[in-house]
Amino acid sequence: MHKLEPKIALVFPGVGSQHTNMAKSFYDNSDIARETFEEASDTLKMDMAEICFSNDSADKLNEIDISQLALVTASMAIFRVFQKEIGLSPSYCLGHSLGEYSALCAAGVVEFSDVLQIVKQRGRIIKETISSCDGTMIWVINIDYKTVEEVCREYIECGDVYISAYDSPAQCSISGRNDTIKSLTRTLEGSGAIVYPLKMSGPFHSPFMANAADEMKAVLRGYRYRFPECQVISNYNTQPYQGTESLIDNLSKQLMSPVRWQESVMNLMNCNVKYVIEIGPKDVLKFLIKKITSQLVPYSFNNYKLCDELRNMLFVSHDEYLTIMERCLKIATSLRNYNTNYNEFQNGAVLPYNAVKKTYEDILAENIFPSENNVREAVKMAISVMETKKIPQQLFSRKLHQILEGKAL
Image 1 (cartoon, rainbow, N blue to C red):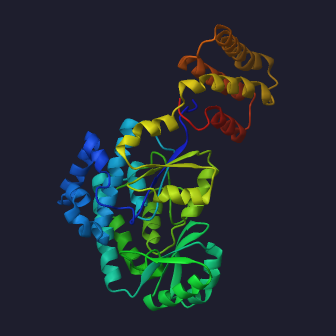
Image 2: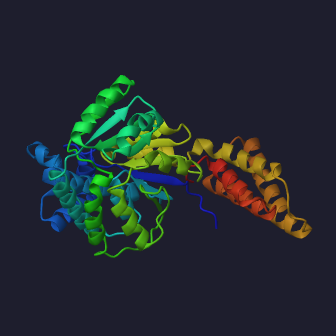
Image 3: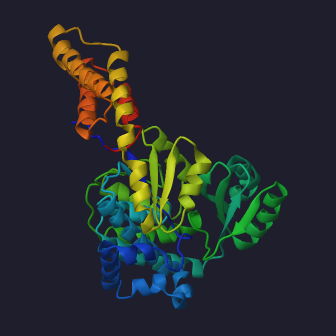
């Protein structure tokens, strides 16, 4: 049975997306969001609503350990509202740095209470590591990452700096020793780059975090994980997770390896994904995806009032029903037949096609709108025809995607 839901990807942000009042609109309007904050507060023994919503907690929200817990809590609250209000299951989940933990939780790999405890330990480990480490991170934009690699080559060979994130063709991050980063900043700016030092900074996603990665691996071994309900793309190798050992290995190595965001997003393009929904408090990932490709449609679900707008984007409207029936009829007649069995072709292709064609002609003659059932029968016919004609799987998937243009029926 072929799904008539779109292949969508959900993406979850990392540290830097947090802000006071994040996810407040979801908390105010949704029971499931409030319950998520309450669950986090009970698990962590701290008031996560107070931390996320109070101006008095702004400084605490920007602490490297607390910010991670707050961002995972907010992201999962938004995700659960997405589940309840939109009701579509993602085909892919991926997160940027810390966001990978939210992605794994959303995919059912790890319980929310467990992911909070894991992230709490991650925050502690990172905080302890950077407190005794001579290092920082900068954000570099307005320059091709290959040029950055060339400019950094001498420094990289000395082990003083590393590319720590490949975010888009003209945006990356660099981690390294403080003095070296200062010198490198001047060189990059001389090459046309715009350089920003990052808040709460340390030499993240680089070999400077090797000891932290080892400690994180020990933490990760203390929890139980389930098989993902959808594919989760790893920051470390841009590939889907393959079981518990790959999870422990990837998440620990993530701390000392660059975030390969651009490659991860490019991989979605080869999987018939059209819509990529950012599940988080800002639109950082939406911005990056737009910089990477125009073939994906990114959307930031960062306010409860966007529920209706998101539904309209992801679901077929009544105004599109007739066009979808026309697409089904066209696809049924335009594809080559690889089936030489006459009876199979008659029963699986000709008869279903003629039935839908008659319905379509009656609709035109009576000048009425097709019903949802008419459209479902047309899609069912197109699937039957393609199966009967033995259309190659890759072409089959592409045509099925084209019928609904990546939307849900």
